[in-house]
Length: 180
Length: 130
Image (cartoon, rainbow over all chains, first blue to last red; front, side, top):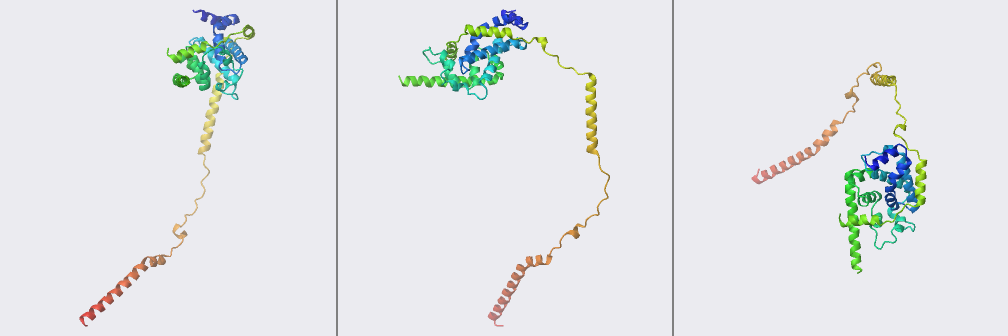
């Protein structure tokens, strides 16, 4: 039995310490993802906290055939959607806000971060699929489970996302060449 | 890994996120305060006695029989009304008017032909000196 499975078993038995150890490796990864989807850093932290508490509370429903990270991301995506609510804007409209946490977290970077463009060009679900694939190296099946979508939907939308970002990269490169 | 995938992966790693001590304390406190639902803690589904199912079945069958009986119930036969004479009820048509309308043009044409024939006979008689 792997360490992760041992920790899961202990956490299922009610050990908060075991669960804290279990999710320690995932906290920064989840927070990074949530920062790109939340209107502020504080909101991203709140969603992270809610996600971990919900995961601990409902750990009995975790199916070990899934990767644990897939299950965590599924909860995080749902919580992030709840935070933003139906009346709020798409993630692409967060870009002009001064307290945009993603802009704050990449402020020191010299080159453009492609995830900023992705957030403007892709819708929520396609963005999440792209993140899980390229930032988390998840398989198509795991992404389908995390998003509660079919594998074919995931494949098609990953391809669309790639095409959109590829076109954006090419046009950006042409513009920079044109301006010398 | 192609160029786009690599850039996406690297750019994700460049997002500078860190869990602050305060957030860590908050998370640990909320985890300790949370009570996990244990696998056996869910209330067992309510099982109904077999008598309940028999009662439901009998009620359903009785309702079905009642619906079928009502649908097939017919009132006692009423005395049949006397047959209506359709021919008598129909309005009479003015057939003569219709005949005159149809034969009028033919009669005029016949008169014209007979008139032409008489004229031709007279003309022939004059030419041969009768």
